[in-house]
Image 1 (tube, helix red, strand yellow):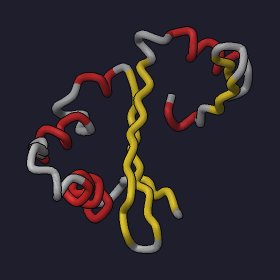
Image 2 (spheres, helix red, strand yellow; image 1 turned 90 degrees about the vertical axis):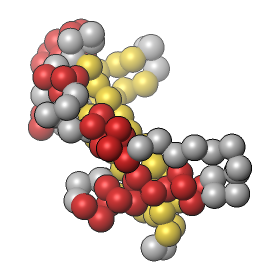
Image 3 (cartoon, one colour; image 1 turned 180 degrees about the vertical axis):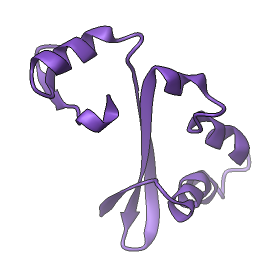
Length: 107
């Protein structure tokens, strides 16, 4: 299995279409509008991007997309993350258990 960042037209389409293939046999599934999903990740339509970052990825098994995930960091609400980042050379600790590395390109 491979994790692929969503960063082009092809991977965006795969990200959007995955739920349709997962739930195709569920008569109660109603797919969200692609435009609404895309607007979450578009800085022109979502003001979250003014004070945070988001990335999304798809999980592929050979050539088949089998999963998707998105991650959001809101620096406005989590100012401590930025301070810990600058003080500890890209690392910060959460819940005294997990150590997470933040790449400088996201700040």
